[in-house]
Image (cartoon, rainbow, N blue to C red; front, side, top):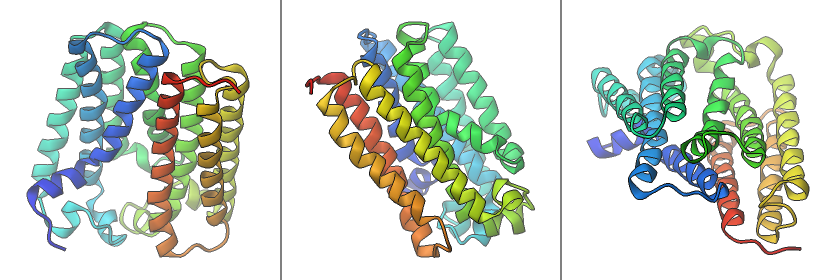
Length: 290
């Protein structure tokens, strides 16, 4: 597989994930009805973008053996860059993300530092601890909403907390599915005793399904009780489609899914979660009462 340096960096840092996190921060800031000025807005977006890039780069640095066993088409596996380059990119982007929060406020800075430290620990060791590393990844999907609230309000609103719960539950379910997909490499290369190895793939698939159902119930709660989503058609109609897609994907993991299913489901679940964030954004901007 031919991959130039620019493409290698994009794949190493998973920039598409950074874009999702940046939108999540904007959603939180809009819901508070207190968008910061342009300089602070740019800095508030830089933190999740660069911290996420650094976390993914370091994950590939530590995980190259497992990725090779799993035949992942990643830069270090195909030789598009070396481990020293990945380490430099990971460390550099983490520092940039932390530095951006230095000019916002103390809660934002502390949040950035804590998650940068845990990101390093995750790639190095936490990933091999049953559910601990996966909980961190799920939190990293939810924390941008809380971070955005800290940027403009310095405190948490109920609507932000409920959104964070929805994203956390969905993210943890997706992580369990990821463990099922990467099981061979994680066991052979890292000798990890993860959640799937401990309880088996069948039980793990049911646990993920239960988490997705919990997220769907929380998204339904938002429609009835949480502004600006309560009785908002802009929220209800697309979120039903997103919830249905995630539920169908989760059901597909029950049984003996093929490698092709794993690959397509990974992209589809990421697209569904990205769509849910866009739904939150649209509902925060436009209200059409049902």
